[in-house]
Amino acid sequence: MRAALAVALAFIAGGIVRQLVPGEEPVGAAVSRPEAGDARIETQAAALAARFEASARDLEELPALPEPSAEPVAVTVTDAEIEAALQRWRSAHGTSAGVPPIEIRPPEASDTEDASPLAALPASELAAALAELGRFSEGAQALYEELRASGRMDDLISYLEREAENHPEDAELQLELGTAYLQKLFGLGPSPEAGVLAAAADAAFDRAIEADPSNLEARYVKAISLSNWPPFLGKTGQAIEQFELLIASIEERGDTGPFVESYLYLGNLYERTGDHERALETWRKGLALDPANEALLAKVESESR
Image (cartoon, rainbow, N blue to C red; front, side, top):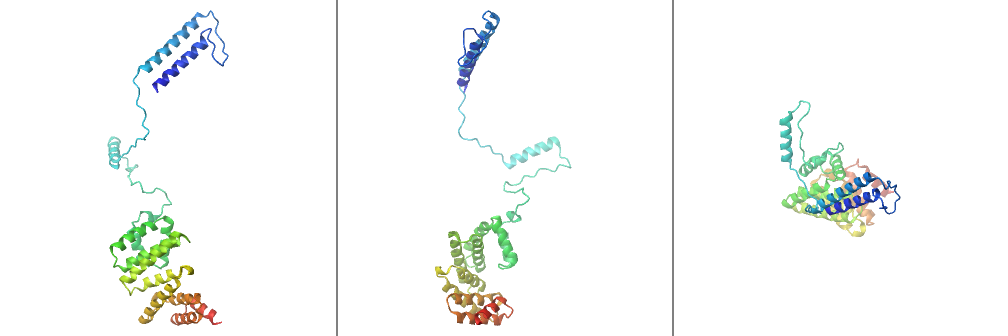
């Protein structure tokens, strides 16, 4: 850099001399020349040129500066250093009642007004809230929707995967994990990832049923999930089997509970396979258990025409 400056100074000095000293025409430019007899100007020009040349020599004799590093230098300041600096400032200036002390927050804390309130909640609390609301309640569905919108579904799934792996005997944890897979799937639409999530959900429901064969909810969700697979994938038979097992358990208990819709789904699957007689029989059995069920009533009336 210094060598370049020296060359530049020499160039400038030469240019000035050429412009001021008679007999030196600048290249490519027309300038007005002082009168040949003006000795004072010639003397000043010569002195100025000498000063520039001396400066150029001085620059050349200075030791070279180190080349700048190509790598940027990262400057980091810890929270402790910031807090110490703030304390020193407060000690020097005092704290005014109208100016509260500055609060140092972690970098991930958001200052935007539209930040989701879910952003700061641990995944464990999200899972607990969903369990408290009930997986299929309107409140739980609204919460799942917010989790999808805020990008927290992956956090929830990662937490449930760890818990389910650590507690394979806990049927409820396996069921929660399978349900979370399906809830993420709902936000994707048809895609390769959706197929992976559906298979993972089915495996989680299998683990829940294995851990607790009497867990009707796990079998119910598994059957519904299988019934939504495209027919060409060959899951219809498995879905029918799961609904038949579920209905057998319901009738053995003598209480449909929240699973009366199983008759509607099973009848629909029979209809899909062309077995209209069994479809109608199944819908009628469900309607006898729940006469106010409009979906079952519509199916019975439609098939009876």
